[in-house]
Image (cartoon, rainbow, N blue to C red; front, side):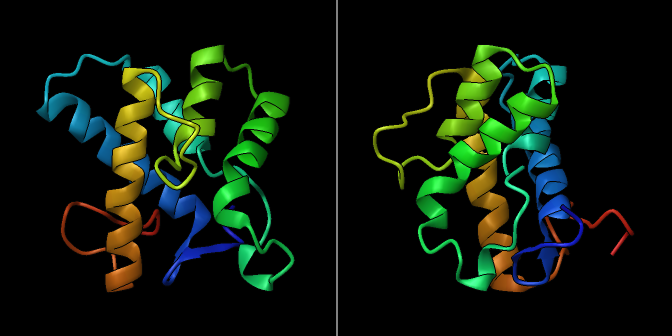
Length: 136
């Protein structure tokens, strides 16, 4: 995940870390009481699709990567059904039929939109506490 660019100059790995941090903050700031361990694990795996979507070999990436990420995550990690569903639904409303069905899914979906917008528009990790794993 560190080898693939996600948004702007942000790697997929750093994007997932940003989403995990933002999800944690949303959960606690809004007193949503989602399980932190499940929330962080799911946020870290929500874009575990393991390919470069910029190379034009995945033209429907926005619509398909959530399923690819969930399939890879279930294959490589012991996830429960709620965590798998949260990964599959994180692209709502783009994937209109995949409405988030749990507190964790809603938090990750919201955090993903916040982080994606920030990363795409700024190309930097300043503000909102978003930082890369190397401290930038």
